[in-house]
Length: 89
Image (cartoon, rainbow, N blue to C red; front, side, top):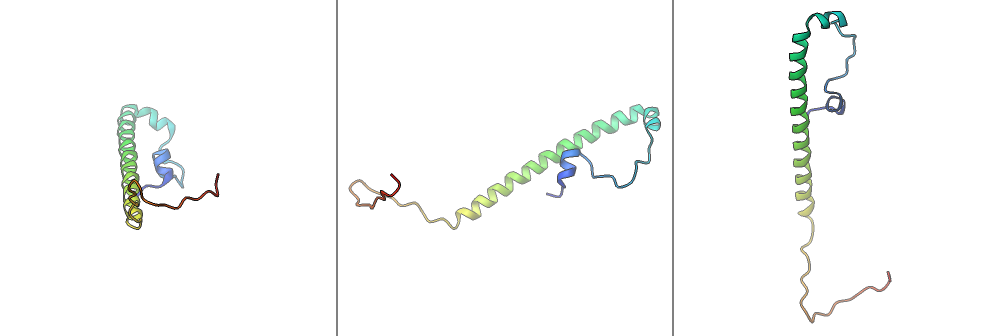
């Protein structure tokens, strides 16, 4: 899918160094921060939806490939003789 679990949960990659912008700088640029946060939240929501779509596609693919190896169901008619197990009564 291209996303780490950390990114999908937290919305960002882990930071290995301290941030370069201090809290006082952020308060000076509040309108820029609001716009950035809205775009960040929208991008995160799109990424989560894309990851969910990939998971659904993987489930469908796995079911298809698993079912290729299954034998077809037996068809019984009224009056056919069958063997029954009584060991689990």
